[in-house]
Every structure is written in C-alpha cells, then in structure tokens.
Length: 453
Image (cartoon, rainbow, N blue to C red):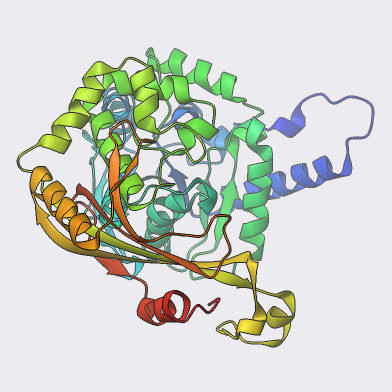
C-alpha cells in the first residue's frame, strides 16, 4: 500500500518558508531510511501519541513502512515505574490483546541498578503479552526517594533520558548489533520542532554498531494531539489518559494539573506517596517542592478537597513501620568562574581571583543520618540538639505539615555565592547517606576558610 505522508497534501500556491522545506526534506529522508531498515522498533510510552502510532501500525503496516505481517516490528516499553494504575489497566485491556492477536513482538526493559554502569534488564520478550510489569529492579521513584529529592524541571527531562532512552538504546544496540534499525517516535504534528531537534541530534551522533533511522509517523501524517485523542478513543472504545508518573513535576508546566489532580482523586494511595516524596525533599531543601515557585503538591491536593489522599499521606507519616531519621544537611554553593578563567585555566581551577561571588557555581551537598527511630523519638532528639546548641528550632510553614529545622549555619541574604548552610531536620528515613566526592575539602575551603570555591 502507498505510504501516508503529510507532504502529499494540497499546498497553497505561495512558496513555503525555507525552514519548512528543510523540515519536510528531513522527515521524508528519515522515513525512507526507516522503511529500508531491516528491523523496526516503536518506543511505546503507553500514552496517547505512541498508542495512536501502534494502532495505525496494526491497521495499515505497509502504509507505515512495515512488513505486512509485522514480523519486522518490535514494540519496546521502558518500565520507569509509578504509572497510574488506570494507565496499566487501559493498555492491558485494549492494546495487549491486539498485540497477541497479530503476534507482535513486545519487549519490556528497565534499569538494573542505581548506577547506569549496572546496565539494563529485559523484563519480558514475548509475542503473547498479558500483563505489564509495574517496575524493574531500580525505578525513578527509588532514585528520588533514596536521594531525598524530586525530579528537577530545569534538568532537561533527565528522568526520561536516564530511565527510558538509556534502556531502550541499550536494548536496540545489543539486540540488533550491526544491523540497520528504524525507530518510530510518537511526537504529534504540533511537536514538529521536537522531531527536527531529535533528527538533528541523531545526525550529529557518533555512529555505533547499530545505525538508527528515526521516523515520526504522526508528524508526517499531520496528526495533531486532538486527532490522536479522538482516534485512540474511537478505536479502543474507552477514554485514554496521559502516561506519566504520579509524582510528575511536568504536570504543572504542561498545563495538565486539573487532570493530574483528578487522577490523584481516583488513586489516593499514589497521591499519598507523591506527597511523602515531596515532604522529604522539602525537609532536606526548603526549595525542594515538586513545583518550584508554586504551591507544593500537598497544598494543591488540600485545595482540591482530596481528603482521602491527605489521609493516605498522614497514614504514611504515622505508620509504625515507617522509620524516621534525624538528618544533618550540609550544602555549599561555590562562586562561579569568570570568563577569563574559563578561557585560560583548567576546569578544576579554584583560584579566588577567578571567582565572582555574584555568579552561581556548583552546588554541593552532604547528607548524614544522626539517628533513626519513630517520628516522636526523632522529634525529641532534634529538640535535645536545639537545647544543647542554645538555639530555637525554626518552623517552616511552606508545606502543609510544618517542618522544623535547627540551623547551625545560614546562607547570606541577599545571596552571595561562596556560601554554606548546615542544619538538622527530621523526616521519614527514605533518603540514604550521601556526599559528593571531595565534599569535605570544598566544605573546608568555603565554610571554614571563607574562600569562594
């Protein structure tokens, strides 16, 4: 059958803008290379866009550059963990039966351990999938809880790179070593800039053992998000929802907070765990909420009247099986390097004259556990430490459940980099002890000697 392509649609008489011609040429060339590849993969994220691509592949494989029997297609799913139960249910009831019927190869992969050097693991490789894995050995939530932090929105979607791209690329590299591979990515037509960015990055990438040709079916066929939503719900006969973790920091920036709050109503236990994650993060860092410069998730859940979710959160905090810890937090913010230093000196230069205290350098953190026990016992120990220090506990009201800290060192106000802070705080004992390599040396230079770095 003839392939579907956006570029065959009628066009106005005026010449299109040059950058659009470039986009079309890139996408057309990408599809040609995808079609010619011996193996094809679809990165299946469980959401609207990739589900629509998969349904289209099942409907018209040849039109999308696949073998008629789909024997050259592998559907890959990166198991990040912490999806809403409704997402798992929808895919298991509406998509997996279709894959079984057509005998499509379905592979689930996940991180194998805390370090990327631990590699990935294959959780399933089958043509008869019945149930999705909920987690692998190490999940994004594991990384956040043990680190005592939340996903950083300013980090350039590092969570997706480390828990999706890493395992998917690893599997493709190993499973199809030396062969040309076509990979379909489910950006919709309103995300054509993302497709172009991805294609340019692929062009610049170093050649590896398995060359990859990227295809963007929804961009090529002009399918917008509204088209995708309508198509998926028509074909599956059920409402479909976004695929995201229940502690996703992007739910606010992507304008989907009302939907996110609704799902937290439907799954209050997930909401409780998300709020506990945020609570620990804010205890260890007063700016550590899921939504920087916005109301914490706890406040938004409370404003939404989600009493059941708030109850789940309180139950987690007061669970007798939940240990608490008295944490000692030390943090250093070095001063940034001046431009002349960057041009002339090595990256590890720490000369005071090369630093500007108005510029932010590298943040360093040390997290140590001073004691563990019940919530009450840790609070009592914190009060004892305050009495010993002859200082009062400071009560942080920004979270719905107030957080008390004993500060031994405060950051300057206004902030001047080349500064340090130190405090004690109680929180659920989910975070583990950790310090950056050479932290003690940096702490001594900045906190003790007063140097900028």
